Amino acid sequence: MMPSLVASDVRWPASRAGAVLTVDLAALAANYRFLTHKAKKAVCAAVVKADAYGLGAEKVVPALLRSGAREFFVAHVDEGLALAPFLSEQARISVLHGARPGALKACIAAGMRPVMNSLEQIGQLKALAARLGQKQDAILQVDTGMSRFGLSQADVHKIAHDPSLLDGISLSLIMSHLACADTPEDPANKQQLDCFLSCARMLPPAPLSLAASSGIFLGEAFHGDLVRPGAALYGVAPNKQSPDVIRPVVRLQTHVLQLRQLSPGDRVGYGLTWQATESCRVAVLATGYADGFARQGAQAGCAWFKTWRLPVLGRISMDSMVVDISAVPEAEVKPDMLVDLLNARHGVDEVARAEGTIGYEVLTSLGRRYHRVYQHDSATEDANYETEAV
Ligand SMILES: *Cc1c(COP(=O)(O)O)cnc(C)c1O
Image (cartoon, rainbow, N blue to C red; front, side, top):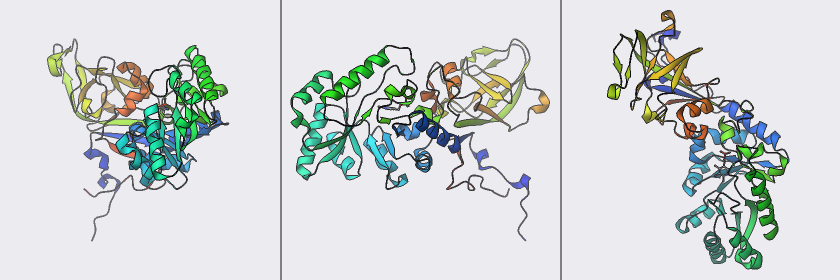
């Protein structure tokens, strides 16, 4: 007879990994709907570069499709090709960096729309269009101040004087990118908007796109015809003034591997950089810098258990870190318990501040070896909690 499975026989597959990363796809969808509503006169695209900011494009993209997203942006041609299996017929991928000569054909053949950032890229697409005898759909980016991607003002004037430079190309969007959108009071925002609109007037008519996540919060003047949020979809606040409008999407829970009692004078970690001045209890956690977590932020870094803050002690190792767990009553502390490194109350922005970085980097640094759980993933909702007899 088969042994019956009772609760205690069910081993969570998460115990095989050091930590559990939970991605709440319903929160992601809610963020998408919120941004759609906020920029309601524009199309709301979704930026899913860098594997959807580290959260897993193969889960994130279908969830966004279910929420109505049809325009997706990646940085590289390869990223777009990898997404093709998860997209529906109606969806379109645009490639922010455009395509280098060797990749342009593959980009077009896959139905992806390149962003043209230079006269060279325009020339290459024009030549390809002539060779194929077919007009090619593309986005034109203009640089309006951050000196990164896009045509210079001089290039825009060249096209204004010689529109044949765009022969064979059907411009379906003109875009630019804001440098200071997370600081609404920065005058650079308005200057970039004015510059963008004046460039657009010199170019053939096409829909306009300027705002990424933070830009959406600068007001309707910045929305144009299409907005391109990334970070806000994944739970990063768009600016300091609106910390609570975006729902947290990730939770990161790590296992306690070992508990120890320290005496005054005991030291912790590589370099023995931390020394106990009084007795304390510490926990060794199963997450380290190889998991992309809290590298330079060790001094300010911490974990949380319920409402208790557990400060990191000493240097973070590759696969582990040590935290002070003295504040937690002993009765609450169990071997193999999980503590939080990121949760709804202490999210990516807070951790980023402690580490001296931004929420974007916290997300895109998330490690590859977490056990990942996708909540509210209609395709695999029930399969997340695999059961296994022990
Ligand atoms: C990454 C990126 C975005 C998305 O930016 P967020 O700040 O994450 O919303 C939009 N547009 C361009 C050009 C980008 O490079």
